[in-house]
Length: 332
Image 1 (cartoon, rainbow, N blue to C red):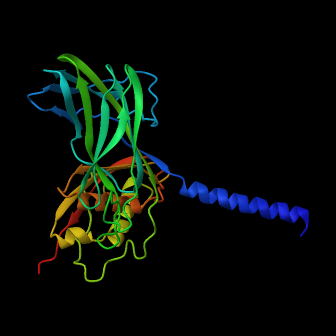
Image 2 (cartoon, helix red, strand yellow):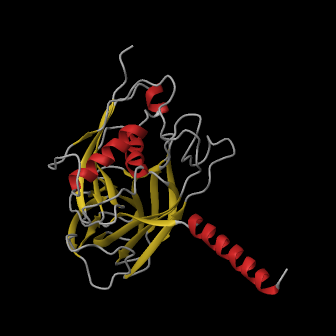
Image 3 (cartoon, helix red, strand yellow):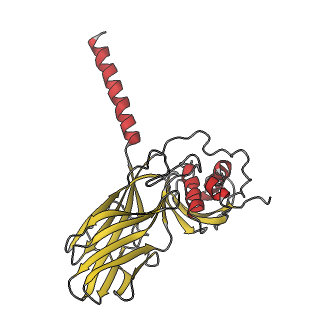
């Protein structure tokens, strides 16, 4: 073969390999920026101390991975804890609703500042099967911002042990729910005014394995109720946000299935999703505005929403909307 052709072939193979690696590279998702005062709470055993959390202005120069828009308040979540006695104490930092990661999660990170230092932080999650797990994230330094990371180990060979994020025998959705953080402090004497500040929660995710039939109605499944939109926008077409929302609803109705494990357990509910579409038609943000009360249904709903993106956005304008996803079992 001619040397130039050989070089061209090698360059093409390298480009293909690079493209494949790029496709497999983990993606970073910003799950929460701790800038909503009502989204987080803190708690400690009443006989051990008192903890109070509140929103405070965010300092300049934080090593954030996100680039908040101008509408995002420049706040973070700060916790003050007073401990009554020496010993080892646990402080719980809990979101108002579980934070769902509907993709295959590789790691969870949190950016924390501690005044005293030495605290041990654990991540509390619920896996696909509804089992809780505590993952050690690391220890905090004194008077410094620390990004702690918990790496999620793969499940066991039977896909039913360890941290399970997906199981084809039960369901077609995947993911975990973040239930909160546990901070362990070893106090040598009664202490007042211990401060912890939380600025960013993020996840490293990779695309899950493609499964045949995802997004298609299951044989023998009861017909789920169609998704209903709860938004002030109206209309069904044209270069406007309303037309884009109508397209999103059609795609969701086509791909919607009832989570098999939820159906077997007789679980019903309604999930209200809050989403933001960027100017290019990508999903800029998605969260649970109102939970159904079931992690299975919440995870399925947000996974369904994410599965329909990207969409053509002829309006070329970013906008937010809410979507109701209703899961009802047919009467026997």
